[in-house]
Image (cartoon, rainbow, N blue to C red):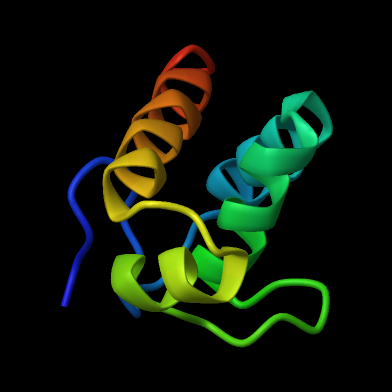
Length: 79
């Protein structure tokens, strides 16, 4: 199952994509980073869907959606 905006599918990922994801991580705000880590299950955070992320961060689901869109824009800037 994929999330709109940023893909969270279990697909093979290229070396270039890994590099982009690592570079993007450095550009994120603390709030974006918290969502990003949960979307991809990074840095010890469990992989979560948008509703779970909203509950765990105690923010509205629409805010998770806006943050995800912001992350997607940053990823797209590398392509």
